[in-house]
Image (cartoon, rainbow, N blue to C red; front, top):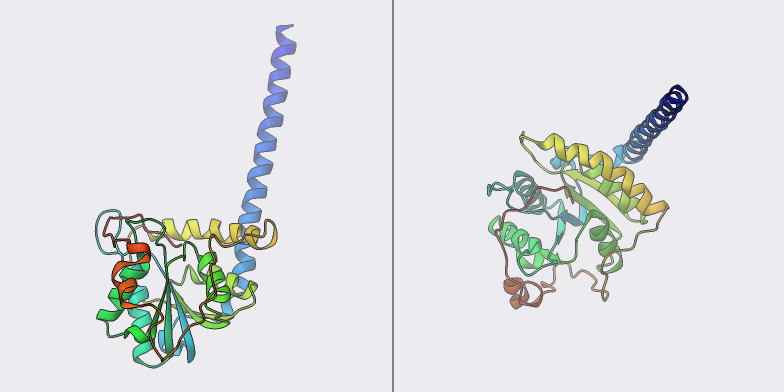
Amino acid sequence: MYRLLQKGLKKGLKIVLMSLGALLLLAIFVLVAGNVWVLAHTSTYIERDVHQCGPERVAIVFGTSNWTRSGARNPHFNGRMLTAANLIEHQQVDHLLISGDNRTQAYNEPRAMWRDLNRRGVTAEQMTMDFAGFSTFDTLSRAQGVFKVEKAVLVTQAWHLPRAVYIGRALGMEVRGCAALERPVAGVWRLKLREWVARVATLGDLYLWRREPYFLGPVEPLIIDVQQPYPLEIIEEGVEGREDSVAPRLLDSR
């Protein structure tokens, strides 16, 4: 009886291990296939030389924290702001839609972006803030649905661009990617690894569970080269009087 029980347990364990192995192989296949699909469908729309980006009327700049968890300046934030400012300075784009997270009172990405770009010489009339860019998907959905942007240059890091470009084109927008200037950063491999997973999740968002943006709101078409669409008190106070924060936050690719 003991021998039969032992034999049954070994057989059951073997089945479980084989099933787990099959699931692992399937997960790896889905991960690789999903990334190959996204990269193959976006590579021709991404420009890694900032001088070759544009000309275009609008550039969408993706938000991220301007601080790292350690309290240091976020190099990815700096790269995006520098690239966006260069596009304006060299007249490769006319207007910047700066989109980021302002979900809580203690955190305001668009305001930090606006201040940094303004210090780099970008005028108020050349920027529009989107306070509900909680993710890459939300930023692009709102750019199209709220700000009525159909053509744009997307500004973010090269490893983030394939997903951003893929989402934009899947939504029907005519977008191209402009890789933000960057320097070697320790630990960036973690962001790239997470981006591999995010690309596969994006395919699910678009084609399986039909994701919707967290918040859309009323239509507010961009006002380009006329006047800043937000009054100065909003620029100074954020949404509903929210205060800007320099609280360290984990680097993320949005």
